[in-house]
Amino acid sequence: MRPLPLPAALAVVVLAGVASAAQGVVNAELGARTDAPVLGAVANNVVGCLVVLVGLAVVPSMRTGLAALRRAGLPWWSYLGGVGGAVVVLTAPVVVPVLGVAVFTIAQVAGGSLGGLAVDRAGLAAAGRLRLTAPRVAGALLGIGAVALAQLGRPVGDLAIGLVLLSVVGGLAVAFQSALNGRVAAGVGPAAGLAVNFVVSTSVIGAVALLAGAFAGPPRWPTEWWLYTGGLFGVGIVLALLVGVRAAGVLRTGLALVAGQLGGALLLDLALPDGPGVRLPVLAGAVLTLLALLVAGVRRRGPARVAAEREREPDGRLVG
Image 1 (tube, rainbow, N blue to C red):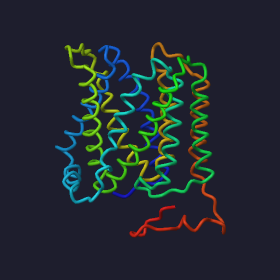
Image 2: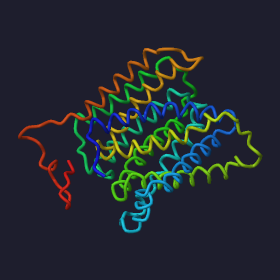
Image 3: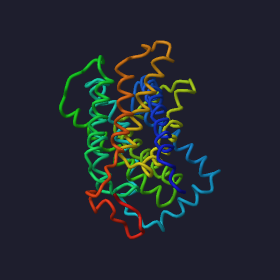
Image 4: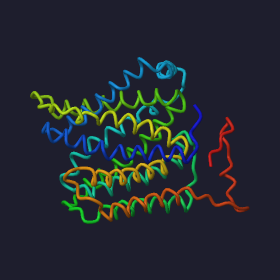
């Protein structure tokens, strides 16, 4: 499957960011209702796996892609992208009650931006190696500043350094998840890459929930159907990231996702009955994140352009 044009791919990721904001609200509410946040993560991934199973039944390309895994010749670590998703889902319930949403979000986006620069430079994603240019670094820093601006006015908890670093690690995990899932998708197709992601992430989350004793007693599952839609959102988000990373690399895909998340937060603030309405810091942060997305994509042209930017892989693909 050919990659989407860059503007279309980034637009898909922005929409996925809106879905991510809704997913966060749904999963948080489910975790609160069950008195065990990790159970919200389990339900999220189980629903995602059910969607994948339906896909296996009705989408021939997904079955073909999975059958091609053995012939793909990918290194074993390429299949670990789902671990990154599990780390994020499991980190938030531990960190947010102590640090607050604002610090957690800023630290996670900082980790994701740094991770995006690193994996793009290392060439872990299907887009190949992307140089560490001034516009890309500026875009990453601008994105972090935009998220910090969006969190103005939110309460700050205890600034425990260990938990701040854990939040940064969560952001790094998202960057590596996007890159590794993108490698699998490039080799066997996005549908199969989606399946691999959910199998791995669900296995990790289920094991952690078991070790944490989340299944020790019968959980109180609420009956409202919409509380179980997080997995549907998750499937769409992972697919969108696969599309975005292939076309734009990990850093710009991450910035597009954050822009959508802030835009989704604005929509939820307006739509929810007890929402605070339009929050100017969030609006400003969303606009600034879109600017960061544009800045990170600036390419300097001229005779002084570094020759390494035109290096090609053995298959002729540009890596710069």
